[in-house]
Image 1 (tube, rainbow, N blue to C red):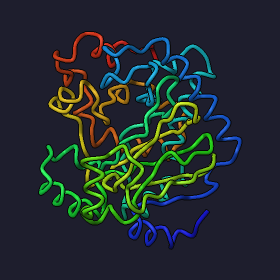
Image 2 (image 1 turned 30 degrees about the vertical axis):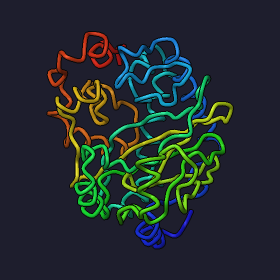
Image 3 (image 1 turned 60 degrees about the vertical axis):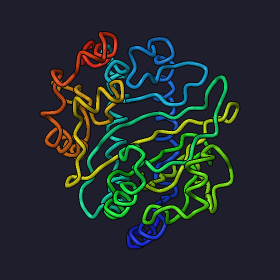
Length: 315
């Protein structure tokens, strides 16, 4: 792996960081088997009315939300339990946490674990965006404020673990710390699915690599039919910049508040994980515990979507 001393400088300059060969091939093979097993289950049990945000399986489906949901890992035998333990240990893998501590200067805090796939039907090239634009209600002046305030430390960091070779994530280096140029603004606002973003850089990743990028950088993910993609996508915040879920967030996003995962409060959910993993998720529960209770669920979500969170298989 890279020298730890270079990670901080690379991150501050570029807003992204790639750590090569962070996981051995055996780990990647194991993760691929687990994730594709979850993917097969998702195809048969998900519906637009039950999945958070409506992200259900279908011809254009590109993301499976919450790989670590206990419904995919029922307590019916040691293998199923070990699958969940493997995923949770991966979220808190030492090589990932070392890079995140270098980025944040403190301990990271878990938010979500998803799975990016190539659609079986019509694909799409993705759209250029900064995540903070979704919190500014279209106010570009507010966007400028968020970019400056969240440049360092970042509000959130995306981490990708590719299970197949991919260059489906593109970023504009350095854009995390400044507002758009005239050309960038034109593409992001008026032509956000085009290839003409200046200085776009595909992250060329191989299985075993780790990629981190700033959520406020100009970036896009591509989900093209016929271009295989299998990428674990994990989002982190930090202990001093938590983003607890709220009822308002759940309502506005049709039940998809990234950190709202009430199964972490269930007895036995963390059984069998490594000690460092246990400590890592104890920080998550300590930060968000009062916001993970089932009474946070607003009835406006409907019975099926509420059922996603309340009718899980036993641990």
